[in-house]
Length: 216
Image (cartoon, rainbow, N blue to C red; front, side):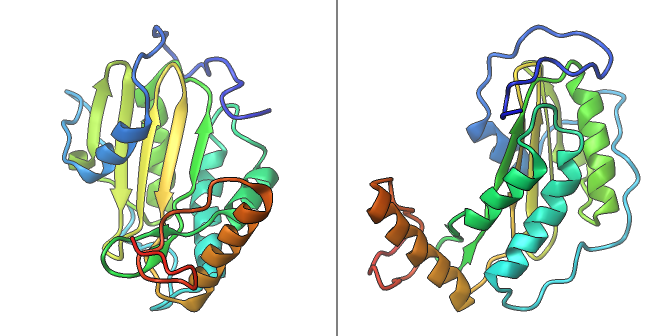
């Protein structure tokens, strides 16, 4: 089943379709302090800090980390791309810029169908994240806004998860740690080469010169 093909998943309680698009607010939910819904608390979290990462991880390490996190959340996202196909997309994903630091990261996204009870979905997602050692706090939760619920979770090393759930669609955005390992630069250059061959748009996020000479 393809992304977004599924109908509403019954997490108890019906809601009309959301009118909000996700792209901007999804990341904002993780980056900004929100308001927790009245009478709602997040799950207890572990004291783990997520899977250990090397100081300057390779792209293979970042891919494995993204698969670990998004693979666990994949189980509850309705109508998401089959896991094997989704993992293949992570393997093919070009690195993204970390900004002025001159480093790169992976920022894959998982999208699925609508949820009848977004708040219940968010609570289940928080439970999974806590088990993964990526805890959220009440300050990371935005309750329900225009029928969509949002939560962010992150680690001091820069890893971040942002989740939106609503009657229209579900989206999970993950950002790995930043790395200066040459394997990420090589992957970016390979993506540009492939784009030239196919005529697709080349990735635009090189924070310092690759052999293409492109800066952020």
